[in-house]
Amino acid sequence: MNLQERDKNHLWHPLTQHKLHPDSIAITKAKGCVLIDENGNEYIDAIASWYTCMYGHCNEYITSRVSKQMQKLDQVVFSGFTHEPAIKLSEALIKILPENQNKIFFSDNGSTSVEIGIKMALQYHFNKGEKRNTLIAFEEGFHGDTFGAMSVSGLSVYNGPFEDFFLEVKRIPAPNGENNNEILKYLEDIIVTNNVAGFVYEPLVQGAAAMKMHDAEGLNGILKLCTENNIVTVADEVMTGFGKTGKHFASLHLETKPDIICLSKALTGGLLPMALTTCSQKIYDAFFSDDISKGLFHGHTYSANPLACTAALASIELLQTDGIQENIKIIIASHQDFGNRIQSHPKVKSIRQLGIIFALDLNVEMERYGNLRDKLFKFFMNNGIFLRPLGNTIYIQAPYVITKEQLDKVYQVIEDALEIV
Image (cartoon, rainbow, N blue to C red; front, side, top):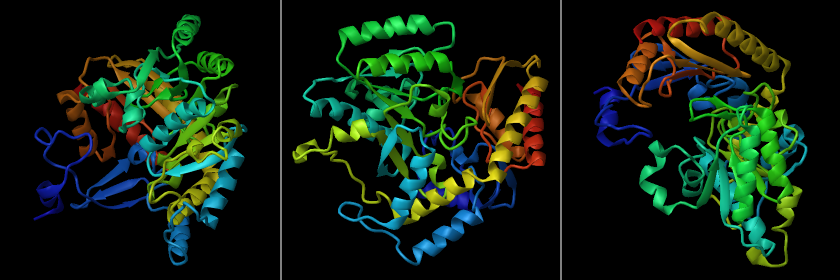
């Protein structure tokens, strides 16, 4: 019995209705931008396995560093202990984060990093003796699958059964350059009529909303208004972080910096699960007290795992190399050329790009997980490209190490796919 058949005996996959999709492709090897299945078929990983393996699969610079570390220290509790990989990672990360970030809290996945950010925002006011219980979030946002993260997410396709149990959240539209003033007026009304603790947002690109991009000036205005009203701003950079928008972090495109930043995915180059929630000194100081109850009582067994810290440090070092930065520029320029070539195609409704993130909307109505989406996914895989359309949106977020030849194949297969829509 092959792996695909054995998988069906016991495994329950994420975001999968197994009655409709009983088969999962068994991947046995991966290197660089290529996935290889149990039958020897190769696929260019054009979304870096959910935006994680940005330096390529099994990157030897990262794996060699982790291999050395695992011979020295594999795991130790991070409550009451510390270790060099965590310290070195914090020192390297603070150098590239927005200048107001100063403290780092470890966890193990993106959703939890947001959960911690929400708890920081709520407890910040609680510790100061203020009762603030309302959060603000964008329409169509997505922040993860834990309850706080679901509460601030706006995609009911994921959250429908749980909405009666959510935190108090007010939603605002994402700014598009034309509705900026209207949003600010709406936000002012929310602030006046609610006890607003925090604003949780994906800066500039809403990933699960099919790479919906919004106006930087409009977002900056929202952040400024929040800051003026002592509303804690929480930037979910789980997807956008570590170079994808053309800067190390999307928040660096903005004048007003967030109080809190949530990070995961590309943090460890896809090698090991880990997440961080970083914050400004102002946020940290609200928890620094002789009163033990004012501490942040949140912890994970694998917080600051030395192996994951080592992978993250190696990844940050790679991000700052001339080679990776030059590759990012090449990918950005290649996407621009592809966009110019394809935007007038009758099957293309619109295109958009920020950094290495490229998306095109098909000129056809589709269900998010409908038959046409499945047909496109199968077409891409049959042609050796791993892409996961989101409804009628096809997007690319390839590893930084993708070659021009591989990128051209991705573009060509997308163009070919337009003929079957």
